[in-house]
Image (tube, rainbow over all chains, first blue to last red; front, side, top):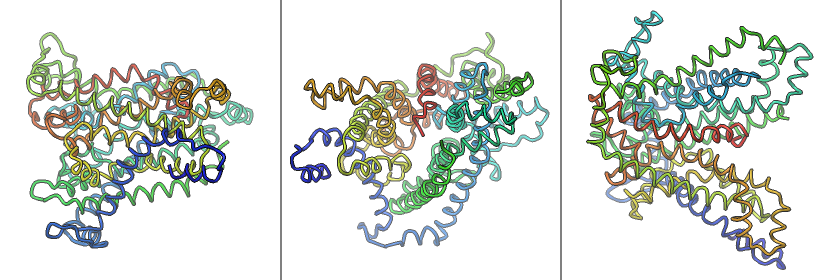
Length: 314
Length: 279
């Protein structure tokens, strides 16, 4: 390792510690070769275009096509818009439900807490293929489970084939995804709530702050760092999502591209689908945009959210 | 907590909400498994009742075992998951040990470099990964998947394991050094056994996304020989859209192994999350 050699030179008396290099090498090699280099390779590919069997440097040409050429831009902006909506639903539904469940689970001397915790986390461990297909069957008008259930609460008239209607399909799939992943915010918030020192709670009780007021005024500010982490995890996960849409609606993200998000758009651009021919360079351009979006989110989190939240930590 | 928060209505309310949500979480799973044991008439006639002697039928399972090569896919998934897990744990623990034990120039920088991958998904490099695999002739091999999953799992593994390795007593390691043990022996004989609980947590976190992944098998290894069970199930479900017995049976077969593993390891997993291993 270069760093180690330099260190050895400065402290000439110490022998080179080869074992440090041996311990680090396998991980660094695999990680660099299959993660970092391909990532930068993809960013680089997005600046080239295949013209007459050879790669030609076109600068930001691919991005101009992506944003401006109606063949691409209509789909791109549609996918981006859908992805933002996908994220908003997760933030508005998944995380509040997760916080609520965690708050209930962490109440002292609650019976069966271990059972609830285990059961609510089950969907999170299932694969997208199972989740996507199982919900497709449940929501299918052919089977009739969903209208049957709505009938129990007298709302049968509300049923429509949600996954088949343009205006509902994306929201329905977002809620399926929420159903699958609500266990993660629940667990992380639960862990944060358990780690609040008893003295803080006791002090609050001495001052007469109990129940809901205690949650809003004492516990919520203390778990804000965890809520920040959950938000960024949700953000990264959502702008990188693909599997659920692909299993439930196919690569065309029907009906009429209404459930198309950046992940499925990338897949179609890269591999081609039906009449469209695959284009690795355009695929790389879309991956670059996704990279920049995720990077921006992570930076906002690291520099704005986390530094501000630190004040509340112990 | 004061007596006010422990009052009976509050407890009942909490249980009611938690029970409702548990039902929502488990309902689809139970529904699918239950109906997979029914005849076609039973599935459509009374989807919400458990199989009775009249509706009980294993036709779905016989179709699945007759048609899809599920045993083979299952084997592929097992090979990929176990091999990736082995390399992630071994390489991850070694790197974590180097980062937490030795002070060398660039230590912090190396830690940050390796932590990059926690936030940036490896999927974004797919275009170049595929080119790399084509160039090295690894397309449609399980090796390609193992390499990619190892790279994917390493950042989080190193992050979690180095946190734990910092807590291993340095007296113990120094005693080993005085006794003339090499650094390698100290790592394999003294430190690794002590961080075994953390390794189990990392194993569970690494295993689930690998087993469930659809993206890389679809792109790097879609051939019949190398299909994983997730990809196999996806294609099978696409082919048998109208054969509900077969679909429900295939879904149940895909759910059960994961569910059994989860029930065995859930304590480990939940302890791992709640002990603050993931911050």
